[in-house]
Image 1 (cartoon, rainbow, N blue to C red):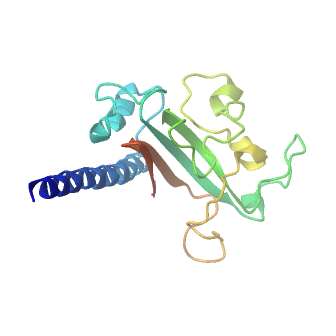
Image 2 (image 1 turned 180 degrees about the vertical axis):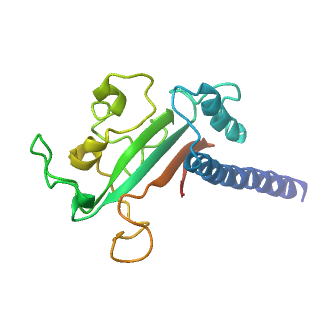
Length: 204
C-alpha cells in the first residue's frame, strides 16, 4: 500500500500546486486591471509600478525586483479600449487623410505590453498592428511613451481595431448602460504553469 499511497499523495500535491498557480494567474489579471483602471502608470516611465506587477506573480517564478522581461515566463497585456458607434461618436466620417471612421468597432486608446509575448499572444489583438506609428508620443515627437494611442488614429486607423471583443455588447447612446466613447480597461495575463500556459483576462 505504501507505493500506492505515496504516488497518490505526490499526485495530489502536484495537482494542488497547479490549481493554486491557476488561481494566481487569474488574480494577477484582476489586480492589474483594478490598478490600471484607477490610473496606475505601468508604462516604461514607471519601472517601480512595472516591478510591482511582476511581484504579483511570485508563485509563477516572475522577477521580484524588476519588471517582467522578454525572456521571462509570463506576459501582461494592458489595454484601454472604447466603442465607436455608427455616428463615429459625433466625429467626421473620414479624416484629413481620407480614412473612414472605425465605426461600429472597439478600438485601442492605450496599450502597454510587459514580458515575453512568446508565452501567449493577446486574444484581442494587443498591441494593435498600427503600433508604433499610431502612438501619440511617436506622432507628436514627445517622451516618454505612456502607451497612449493618438486619438485621431484610434478613430480612423483600421489597424487599431480590437479583435473578437463582445463582452460589453454593443454600446449605444440611445440606451442605458456602457456608452460609446467610454473607456474600458482590459488586462490579459499569460504564464507558464509547469509545461503548459495558463491565460486569464479581467475587464474593469
